[in-house]
Length: 310
Image (tube, rainbow, N blue to C red; front, side, top):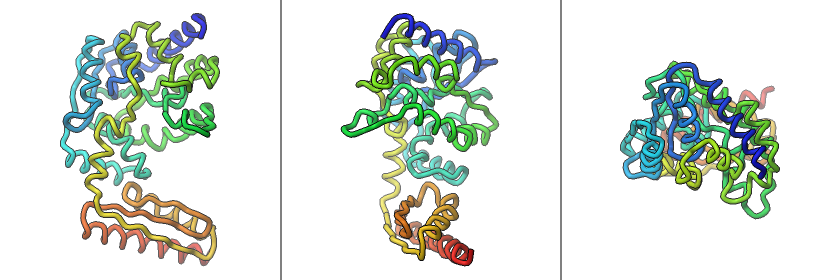
């Protein structure tokens, strides 16, 4: 990596954050390199509120406190019990149509959006897609396409993060998805961005900008793991039911999946194989599992009836 390319990326990151900030901001903060860099750069232009969410004793709360201390910035801990995390997950799933995996991943952001003081939320979304941060990019046989990953995320943001923020009367900005940053990042070969531990150009630019090396070198920890969200949600859903539904055609199966998805998002996971629909239903008790299964099957039966008539 050349110094000129790193400097160009650093300039683009600094400009992207400056462009996004217009008054005091809240940063969805985990203490990792992505959110810490955004917080540090934002603090040069405005009042910054750092919010870190998680269950007691989790990685992200400890990392966030350490990083906030290194940055000399104040941080607020949104520490909630596993039961409260589960309740928040149900509230999230009932508000926005999401897959179960998305509920786990976005739950810390939901909590930050709910408790934020300021109307603008800054987050680190996009850094892992743009700079190759996910471990799945480095698995044997993987053939990642970072440009496609970024484009897919940009398409999802209006249906996910922006919807969640606006639910609480807030707006969200993702500096890593600024056009200047994307152009500067794509000057580095994809292989260079993906090579373990991932995000080498971003880490180099962060160090160039003055981010403490203890944060620059911090390994990636996915939000659903670091916050305790996945553990809390999955522990609460100890009852599971697997169903296989076969329809007259793939078109009918697809119609049923499309029609039932929004009403059951977060608690029913669907996978279609041709004319077959596989459903996995989860709940915290046998009674709630029965109710969830009955609701799903009623929706599926109605959707299939309508689809078969078309």
